[in-house]
Length: 384
Image (cartoon, rainbow, N blue to C red; front, side):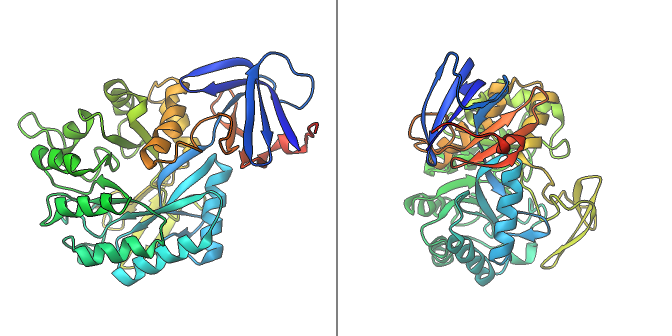
């Protein structure tokens, strides 16, 4: 069965093809082109883009990847998929080592089509830049513990954040990379020189740039400048209006380019639920008007963002053009994670993960591996 999607504005690389069509066979893209088609689903000039990829998400609908059962894991993935995220990493935050390992094993065992693997945010982070992480569970890198965490993912550990200034931090980055896992720098008090050493050791991601690190100072440029000037490094941004001033969004895109910006959500279990009080281990988070804060008000505690909203705000509030915003939600994270041979682009042979957007940058439909999972287009039929 071949599905033809016609009369679309198609995001291909860094350009938009007008009057375009895509054919989908089974769960993959078969071909695309331009020109009129009479058969298939009429997309009525809407923008058709690759499905979004979220490298950094912790939860939704009251569930957290750190302690969710199989039903909870599925609920998180499905919620974010409805908002355009067709590929995500399950973020596991700082906790007791056995709990983190167990959570990773549960994620790996879930084997969901939209779940690309495990992301560890902790426990080898800086107490000084802990954010919402429990300082009692933060620790120095240990080779055996690191190996335990990586192996708990059963081959699905894809990304790990570390503070490189900790004793053994640079060696830990080398160990992470040697395992085939992407290493990130974050929740760190590292200075410029240590950060450069971390990148030279193999780290290629700056976890939620600006947050959980030293601010820029003209005599202490720190992680931010080191990351932005290094072409090897992908800079994560949380564009929810709380983590960053909107002016910083456009600034980073202009400074490093969309090919080095990865939009993320850092979404917690409150996402899709609403304001209220949430408990994670020893941590209590209060969500008010969408802003998640620790109970004592000392730190932001993740977000209630979706990738749909992240892309919207990047365009509307950050002044970034739609193609660049989509690139930072698709091609950039795909390349960063090494999955750009099957995800992050609309191309023959790639997974048929697609989002349909209107002029307001709102999602009208989502296709996951060739099947519509949301949208009024579900009722339309196609020709074999």
